[in-house]
Image (cartoon, rainbow, N blue to C red; front, side, top):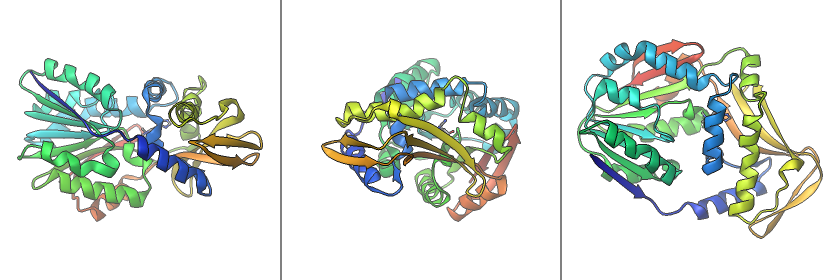
Length: 313
Ligand code: AVI
C-alpha cells in the first residue's frame, strides 16, 4: 500500500483577505470555495442525498450506464488527477475500469481529503495514492512535481466547473491542459440547462439542507474570522437566472445591520445581498466551445437525465 499526504500552507490569510475584499465590493460576495469547512462538507453530502438535488445521483447513474464506452474512449491511463476530490467517492468507478498506477487527489479541505483518500490505497492494491491538501484554484501548478510522467487524465466531475464564470472556467481548463501535459486527457461532468422549476427546487430543498449549507458560511466566518454575523438575520435565497444560465445563491439581510469581521465593520441595508455562489448550467455545445478555447479537443460525450460528461484530449 502506498499513500502520501502533503498539506500545503494554511489558506487562513486567503480566507481573511478574500472575505474582506468581498464584503467591501458591490454587490457583496464571498467565493463559494469557502463553503467547505468540516460542517460545510457534511452539509454538501446531505444536499446530495436530497430528493430535489438529483445532480450527484444522475452523474453516478450516467457513469454506471456508460462506463464501458467511457473507459474504451479513454484507453490507457497511467495517472488520474482529481482536483476538488472531496470524499473521493466518484473516482472509484474509474479506478475499477481503468486500473491506473497512480491517483493524485487535491482538495482545499486537506485533512478530510487525506481521511477519504487513504482507504483507496488499501482497497486498490498496487495503486499509489497522493493526497494534496491545497486550494488548487490559486496553486494548481504546485501539484506538477507530484505527478508522474506518462498519460495523465484530469477528472473533474460533479459540475464543479459550473461554480466558475465561463471566462474563469476557460482559464481553469487551460491550466488543466497544462497540468495534463502531452497525451493528457480531461473527463469532466457538468449540469445541463433544463426546466428552471427543477433547478429552482434543487437549490431550495424542502429539508432546508441547501439553506443550512449557505448559512453555514456565516458560522464559519464567526469562528475563523472573529465575525459576529447573526445567521437568523439572513435568508438563504436561490433562484435560476435564465439570461445568465445560472443558479445564483445569496444571503439576503433581513434587517439593516452592521457586522464586524476580522476587526472591520460592514453595513448591510435591509434586503441587501451577500452573493455566495453561481452554479452555471450549460448546453453540451456551449461547454465544448469553452473547453475548445482552452486548447482541448472533444473526443467523447455522454448525456443522460439532464447531466453530461465529456471527454477531451
Ligand atoms: C459543488 N457544486 C457543483 C454544487 C452546485 O450545485 O453548484 C454546490 C452546491 N451549492 C448548492 N447546492 C450544491
